[in-house]
Picture 1 (spheres, rainbow, N blue to C red):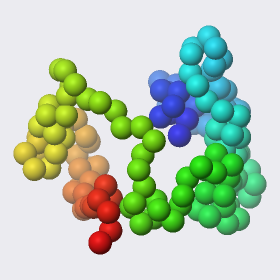
Picture 2 (picture 1 turned 135 degrees about the vertical axis):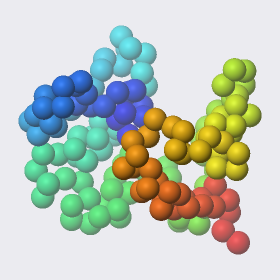
Picture 3 (picture 1 turned 180 degrees about the vertical axis):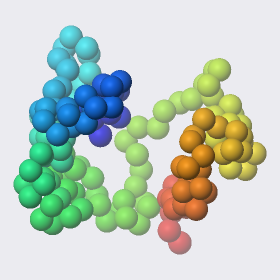
Picture 4 (picture 1 turned 90 degrees about the horizontal axis):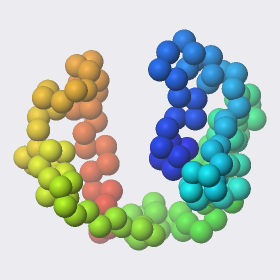
Amino acid sequence: MYEMLIGVSPFYNRNKNTLMKKIKQQKVVFPDRNKYKIEFTDDFIDIVERLLDKDKSKRLGSQGGAKEILAHKFFAGIDVAKLEQKDFKPPFIPKIEGKFGEEDFLKYFNSEGGAAIEDTVIPKQNQQYIKANQNLFEGFDKKKK
């Protein structure tokens, strides 16, 4: 969630040892909303901090799983039942145009004519896992019948 909104990992560091140390010891730091012109709510800060709590017994979801997480105020406006039924309209659908339009995206990332996974930069050991799970979200963007 943090990375999708802020654009970087909350503990980012190029050095793997430093990265691991930061994950274990550092609190999550949020950028200045005004300075960087990033919109996020206090509920967003709260859910991220609680999901990344260093004490796993206190971490959001550790007691009640996904139901506990979805009960957080951050998800208050989401109809979970509709989401589970794949009958959920996203609040924002990006308009993709120009050089990186939908046609180009599908050309490179669609299994129906895109580049073979072997031709990507994905490490070989991960490619088998991806192939084995490529249908995991099949039909997610379509309504259940």
